[in-house]
Amino acid sequence: YKTDAYLGEPIKITFLFRYPIDIQVVEANFAPPTFHDFWTKQGKDVPDTIKDGYHHYHLDYIITPQKTGKIEIEPARMDIGIYRTKKRNTLRFDRVKWKSIFSNNLTVDIKPLPDDVTLFGNYRISATVDKNSTKVDEPVNLTIKLTGNGNIDEVEDFTITSQKAAVYADKAKRKTHFEHGVQKAVMTQKFAFIADQNFTIPSLSLTYFDSKEKKVRTIKTKPIPVTVTGNTTPFATARLEKRENSLTATPGTKSGNSWITALIGAFFAGILVATLWLRRKTLFSSAKAQHPVEVKIKKAKDDKALLALLLPYSGKSDKIDEIIRKLEKNLYEGAKQKIDKNGLAKHFREYVTITPDEAEILL
Image 1 (tube, rainbow, N blue to C red):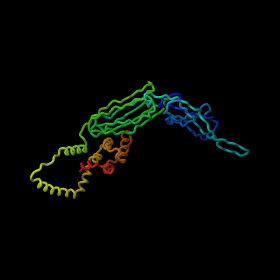
Image 2 (cartoon, one colour):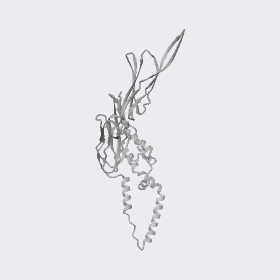
Image 3 (tube, rainbow, N blue to C red):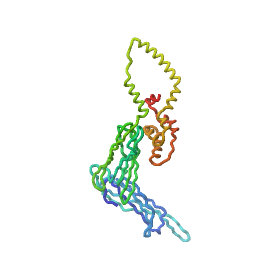
Image 4 (cartoon, rainbow, N blue to C red):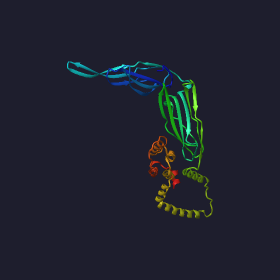
């Protein structure tokens, strides 16, 4: 094992338990050290092997120091039950005798990292998109991949903000394994961007103490420009037109006959209001049928198009979030979960609350 390491550097410790093949062990319970001041992860247990007349068991642990200085690791304990038979006259007695054995203790010297850096290892980072040009309200999918040697569990999820696009982020996925005494790691995180104008995905960076060069390094991705074509969505267009109308409207000019005009206007307005009140059910049902999102849900040609429609409603409904997760698994993990588009369209407004502005637009 390594007797010295840097703060945050993963260390592999192997516990070996062996006993003669002529001893019958009926049960063995392993009690690892408490590993004070270490972040701990249990590795794979190596199956029983027989060598030189002994059974051999290996138990691996990956420990990452969280404190500098000399740290002592207390012994591990193995409680074993040995099957024994005793004969007394013509009687035979079988019993299990328990015994505890202990490993040696370990001491490691942990050195600090320079310049307040908290991450140790050697990494590479990449950023890729599924397309550099898209249409309004169709997502651009970004994949961030971080690979290398080190404790990647200490790397926080990346965050991206944009003033020109809505950004939706998945939780990062991490995989690690030991190879030739070094922890290999992969971290993958996916993002989706939806916009109605051109935008640029910003550069992402990671600073760490390089295990090979023994110095602080910063790695970065390149900014990725994205071109957006097409018109804005019906909701966006309706809001824009409504706002423009309210800004350009001007008060009417007064005249000598203004009271007559007002009286006639009030009369016809009363008739119009009464008619609308009597036909309110028809109007509301018609408005409901014309809800643009519901119509688009039914017409979505595939999972990708449906995901683009639902992403703006992420976090507003548990049901919508569940459907989004299913769609992402279909698109990115090869799953084949069926989505009932007609049922979703029918109950959409039960899942998502329509704002007053949207309700006015629908009417």
